[in-house]
Length: 116
Image (cartoon, rainbow, N blue to C red; front, side):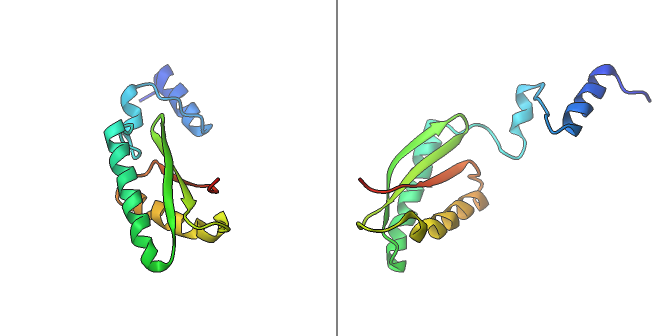
C-alpha cells in the first residue's frame, strides 16, 4: 500500500533525526507527562533524604535550590563543609540521579555548585 503524503513527511523527519511532534500525546512516550510542582516538591524531599543518608558514607551535601523548567527538575547541591570541590562529590550525585531514573524520575538533574 503506498504511503500518504503526511506519512512520507513524518518518516522523513524521523529519519533525519528531527521528529517534530504532531500530537500533544506524542510526548507521553518514555519520558512521561511533564512534572507537576507537587511531584517536584516530592522529588526534592527524596533527594534531601538521600543526601542526609549519605552522611554515613562521609558525604556531606545539602540542597540549596531547585527549578522546575518545562519537564525537567534541576536540584542545586552544595557541600556542607568548606573547601570541598564539586569533583569530589560528582560521583555520588551521579549515583543518586541513576537511582532516581531507575525509580521512574528521568527528568531530574542534580547540579553541583559551591557554597558561597
